[in-house]
Image 1: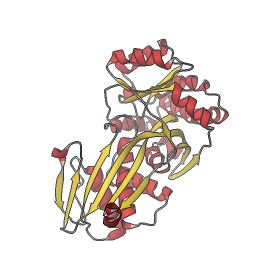
Image 2: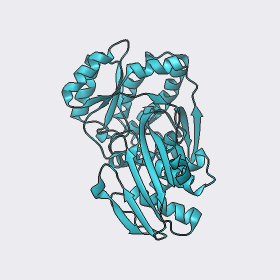
Image 3: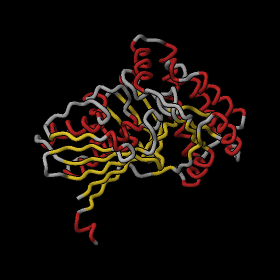
Amino acid sequence: MIIRSKVPLRLGLAGGGTDVSPFSDIYGGAILNATVNMYAYTTLEPLDNGQIVFENPAKEELGEALQATENLTPEGYFILHKGVYNRIVKQFTHKPLSFKMSTFVDAPPGSGLGTSSTLVVSILGAFVEWLKLPLGEYDIAKLAYEIERIDLQMAGGKQDQYAATFGGFNYMEFIGDNVIVNPLRIRQRYLDELAHNLVLYHTATSHVSAKIIEEQQKNVQSKKQKSIDAMLALKEQAFHMKEVLLKGDLDAIGQILDEGWKHKKQMADSVSNAFIDEVYEAAIAAGATGGKISGAGGGGFMFFYCPSNARYKVIDRLAEFGGQSKRYEFVTEGLKTWTMNDETMRR
């Protein structure tokens, strides 16, 4: 028997960072995000030999074989896998499980597309499918958040787990511990035009989001007004972004992104750097009307709104910085799981 899961990565279009505690606890947060056809994959094969084997098919030398126990020390390359396993055993099975697990993500760590959280949802989804756990979308997203932020003590927000689980375009509201996911019914022609005009560019750099988020949290805790005002403005922009997408006023997106980028850089000093600023200004000079870095900042993917046919000049200009523009499509489906048993595979 083989169990598989497939979960999309996301673009945070507006409001990024307002889902992070303590800002979301005090002021409430709002984010608009969308999933794209880049994925985190998990394959799980039950074993009966009392072992747990973790593999990355692209980096076989990183594989790890362990004895199946009720608790695995959460360390090393497969820390996320172990964190999910520990919670599954503690909360659901109350006994060790034996299996082989292989995972892969279409984007590298630190890309700004929510790779870590999406991988957690993918691993969790495989366990849910295997063990037939009675968990709905909100349950899975919340559990993924708790594993990453509470069990493993990794700094970050709440949006990635919910974006990965639900999929599609969502306007999300964060009020204390409560998360409300509002799916948006956007006309297909608006989505096609947005995908045409929004250039996704990998800077060939990465970031450590936890450090940036910790700086952001510290600014809120110390009541640094410049940072708090920036987050309040970003929260308002998420609502504005929702409005223009639903109405099809797409060319307003460039201005929203440009203003949002200015506010985002006020959240923490490490959000941007000289290289990122140079890339941004080059894209604007080539015809983009606005853009931002995806995720916490500091590196990874950026995206730019390029009206009409400006995308082609922008792509050519950005290529000079050593990165690569990425083709993509928006997708509406979130976490997807399935099982292939021996009989099915023989047909």
